[in-house]
Length: 458
Image (cartoon, rainbow, N blue to C red):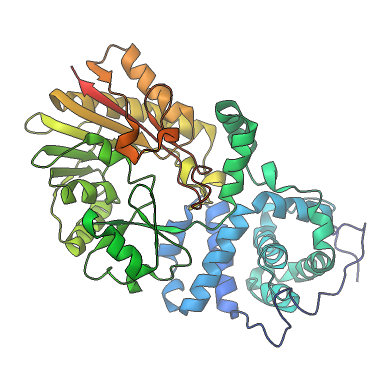
């Protein structure tokens, strides 16, 4: 049989290892083929169709039929492949004489998933190789030999191949890496990138602050300085104590900070612009505000309604474009969680690193400017505006506030005090704004990246 022209002839294909590091073949059970087929579909959807991972997963017809164990494996496999995509592709480049063509996209996806299993998930070699090959669609049958040969070589030589592919910055697009170096310095950029390679914990916001310690004990959770609860390996959220009775909702600890910057909102008329998925709406409603939750997406706003109903909270939901909508009467406060590149949440959504481009940041910055100007107009004199984004890009944070102020908008910055964020003064910038990074709170497992500024209308 002639040699496949894609396979590098530097080294012969090797036999797979007999067992993974975590146990013998007889001891380790592996998910069935359907999980790997779903994972292959999901990876293709993200990297070829440029569709977000969560959206791809929700739309997959086979997903509801998978067992909980297979769901967990497929999700972990795709997420880890996306987190380690730079290293995986660097390993494959050493095993192929030339890049695969677009027609071989299914084979490329299978190779990526196989390398991920072998090098990062410690899947038994026979399963990572054989069952990944069997997950290939029938149309990709011509590439079975290629996938087999490459994965067998990686099974034996993987650690040596990885030496040419350091974790950082290999697993980041260059534009992100260079941008973070310029904004935060190389040491901090490395710390951010390292945090993105780890599975994130689950954070919860308790509806009644007086019950935070109670629910921390019931859930076996860590009580963070800002009052959020943090769980490791939480499993299915719906099965946790307190979910059904609406005692808490899922919200990263950093995402829980901006709403608190509005101060005491009890009895005040407050708009939450771009409200979905609704965590900040719930915070404001639980604090006693009369909340107008505005979002342009009716389906996403329905999810906000469903969550509020579970929590026993109320808000007025408005389907409208927040860049144009104005309230019937001027508001006491506005929270604007503006659409952004979401690069501060890559640790939770590793697909973002590969779906976003610099042009997206520039386009979103223009939208943020429009949203800010309209939000200012919705405020009564003396009213507060908190602008926030879950982005690490300066163009979607401090630069937007600087542009608003330099344009002569009738607002002034109101610096944030450490006491307002549980004494965490290291999260406050020189200008008095909030800036959290994934590398912050390393002793607790990190944070999502958020920026927030507080303004008062003159």
